[in-house]
Length: 400
Image (cartoon, rainbow, N blue to C red; front, side, top):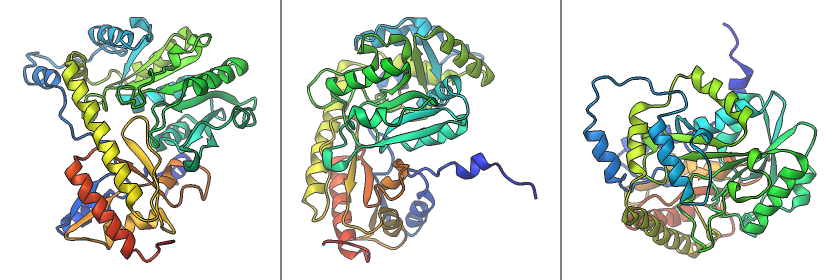
């Protein structure tokens, strides 16, 4: 038999999705599974997007332009200006979700062997996309004990080599919910400027910042405008993960040409998704406030509940709708599997994402999980009870 690719063999499994078969088995056994593993919002999509989807009257569902519909990009230009992100229509390239935006950004900026510095824990698919591009993720660790604050500048500079091409941040952060401060963003800007690097900035959770301080985009940092590659998506802010619409935003002219070659090779982003996304940008302020307030309430409810469980600790996330939690267990991967494979409490169990998959440093995060507070408070309450009972029963529990 022919050998499969080495690239495929080293591609990591998704910590978010790899336990889905066990979850399905648990459901087949009649259990109620509380999904805290994946950032799939349960809140309704905007009525504006759903209505336009119901009333599409086109005779042909044609290819769209490889860079995306002009009308959508014009709407996005105005949307970004609400956040003082001053970009032109030609700086915006529509992609098939934020995932494709990251992949195309890497493919267009990086050669095989090039390196990107990323604070860890980090969104697991960054590693997968880097492998796809033949590049290497080099991580600088942040700690749950310090609330996942940005590591010191010296830690970044110690990792810079002739192969370093960029720094990647996610702000607000997935998986930690951390929100970078102005001081931290300025430090990143100074490194990017000093070493002439790209700054890849994943900002898909910009609507969900809970500190009261102004939202800080990479495009707000003076002096590196042409080095910023902003990653965006409508999935989270409009609860529209399934329409697969994202964007790359950059002022770097040669990079835009490179990205467009990959866009042309995949032909076009989803037509129907773009139509829905364009309408959803007109979502009412009441809709956006409703989603924001709901996540604020869920965040407090979940974090308060977690920190009342003996041996559990979660810092307070300041953005997005995730948190990383340390648990009193010997191995969080085994614990998450055990919850789905062997445990039940009153016909229920819980599905969490082991945090080890968000680290590249071996042995780090082994007692941590990522939770997404995308369930209503009633279900969060039940999930917390199931977690507390599971920790009491788990054979590999520690310090309980």
